[in-house]
Image 1 (cartoon, rainbow, N blue to C red):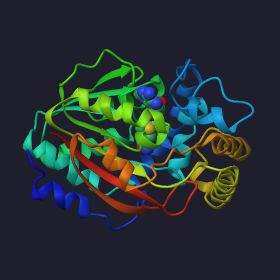
Image 2 (cartoon, rainbow, N blue to C red):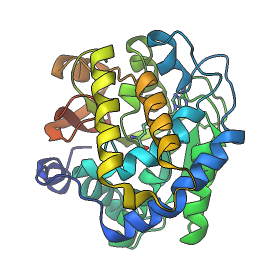
Image 3 (tube, rainbow, N blue to C red):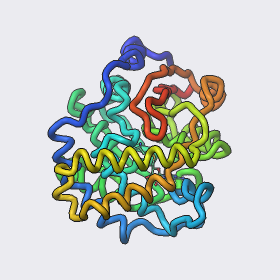
Length: 309
Ligand SMILES: C[S@@+](CC[C@H](N)C(=O)[O-])C[C@H]1O[C@@H](n2cnc3c(N)ncnc32)[C@H](O)[C@@H]1O
């Protein structure tokens, strides 16, 4: 099974940075207070895994759960300060190329911060008039609640699983045609990166494809976190009008952003050699693009399309 011209074209579409359009803006303004509310009860403490891992290394006071991340993620999306699928233009074509070839594909979203990746998949479903089966697995309930919220509004059928992707036995081996996720490789620490790729390899049918992204760079230092927090404060001031419906006052939004910045930690990939090594069992295509970046602006990132041999 080889990569088609269509799929190769997807990786070349790298132009243009993300702009928040009117409909996505309206959706985020509606969902961001909900995400905060859900995160207060649905983000549970975990012995290991999840976004608490980000907070363990750099902080004297690590949080008990991942509410700091899921509750504030969409606030940062409104400021265009966190990596999201629309930063990566290849997703539309990459997902479309799979769905055109197999309209009833079995698709796994392998973790998602909110409904962002489901929305990207939904756009590709519309563009290809396909009817894939969709499973979303995340270690936390909050992003799954966001996906349910989005799915209900759009008459999408989804199957949600709350479990650790690295350990779960609830997903069937060799059952997925497509596994898609944004930046999970830079959420996980270096020793877990080969483990998640091994897990994807196990879950894919022969010829199945992983579509994902991975930022390239170094460790997230305290200076980078401080810079990220300053930018958030500046943008919150500049765009105060955007947050009238946030159900939190300006000082509270600043507090949430500062807390997120204090814990924010990317485990970026070191370069091409690491990506090649991770996907050595796959027929691999990738391209390097520039995104607005989170703590490092801009940031180089790999768009990855890997077909299981
Ligand atoms: C996929 S990443 C990056 C988010 C992405 N940029 C987006 O727009 O959706 C974040 C998600 O990974 C989840 N996660 C982290 N470790 C996990 C694990 N071991 N198993 C399942 N989900 C995990 C977190 O709970 C979080 O919701």
